[in-house]
Image 1: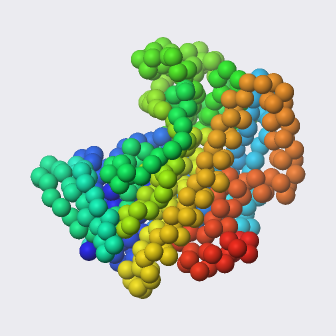
Image 2: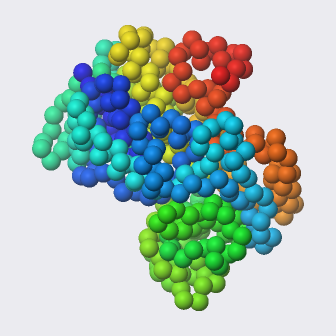
Image 3: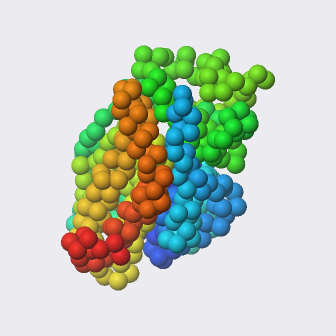
Length: 411
């Protein structure tokens, strides 16, 4: 029986590609009729690039992406606060930088490979309407343009995003909270470094009224800012409002060309379990978080590569199911709580802090860390997700993972 992957975004595509690499039959099910073009996530961290190297796409990602070794914390009043350099990790990873590449490009790359891979079936325009994860396998009920039907599977991977049908059909809780404000992201072709001298390619800018996140990709500069809860979407996305917001960042008399924009709700939520029988949740289906830090997509890819390594051992080597999938669920949920949720919430609170005394403490702390090479190296090791991978591994065999956790080993 195949493994069914539900969701054709970047995490689902990675899961399908990893399974295919192990010679495992895959059926990928995606409700949209064509591969997804969502471009919100665009950061790939060093640990993720190392893991993706086995799928044969990293060279193409570099050809189309932008390497960014340095990022900044700034204040809208004071300017530059601290600068962090991923180059401090040069002895630990072949990729000592962030790679900025809109996520739909990874989807396209993997889709092209999967479409030409024997043993892979792609079912776009197809939704999951029922699912059962049993002791000896699983089945899903599918509804698509070609009609409805039931499909048996050895395992099901739910990679179908924050509103996951797999999670809902399995009745798995999704506890947490939603930020009161919405986040708006807008792109412009103007080089923001020309209007804000000294700007890095990635910048987190604190302000008690309106914080900012500014980053560069090959296509455009992107700005993210909060939209008050009481402001209608139509007003927040009006071209005049968008122009005023960008002019508030830095004056540009010709007017900013705005190439695209999105407004969306942001949550900090985590599934009560990442596993039910032979069904597992990965990526946004398992945990969603603030985008400040660029780790949501990365941790989802780590989820996918963790569980597919385990499924390969189960299906190709006869490894027992429960120890492998229990380890996946426990470790990946722990990483989501201790790293993804904790760090993104801390990053967001740091940017939006309104108390002046705490704002001063935040700035002082960041400056102290950046000025100390060892503390700065530990900082970038954590934000690059190298620390979590060194600590917990990705797809580590259960007996090794248990030993490493109990002894504190990072190997």
